[in-house]
Figure 1 (spheres, rainbow, N blue to C red):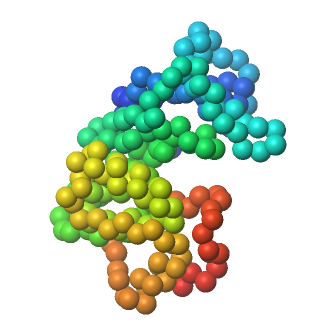
Figure 2 (cartoon, rainbow, N blue to C red):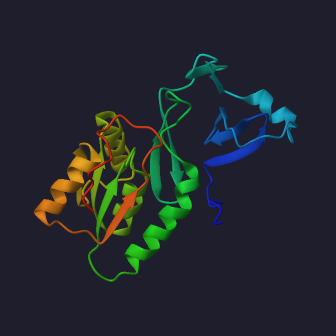
Length: 209
């Protein structure tokens, strides 16, 4: 297993009781994680400095409890990449920091290809992989069914100063879009797929790949 240990703006400070204590630049958040089954906190005092805690509801869902006033959004950097962060529903912040090892791998592969690379990023969310591939020099087609997530991805691309690179943003159901691309005989050098466990798009049946 590769560890995303090259972060400066993100850090897991501690974990206990089904929760993880994280630093997102200078803001400390507590978020639930069912894989954390041990009870004892390694650094109890660090938990006293938290800015916001996400608590699950017994009836489903949950929400943020703010200990201090937070900005509506803020930025964190990974190497040369910049991402916009904000607490949102279902505990997310708009970025999965563990994916940084995949970004590094993609950047290395694209830069060493010695030829133009065309990437299709499906279920592309807020564009972590999109930003990484653009930075490496690839052209990217970014596809997600959520208009809000695609807008957020555009903000990340702009924040990373990559808006002049070759990119297409598509708001569409992934399966419908891919089937159209197959009929059009459009081809890509690489396809990134990280589908959510739950989504509101059309049924995944009928994908003609």
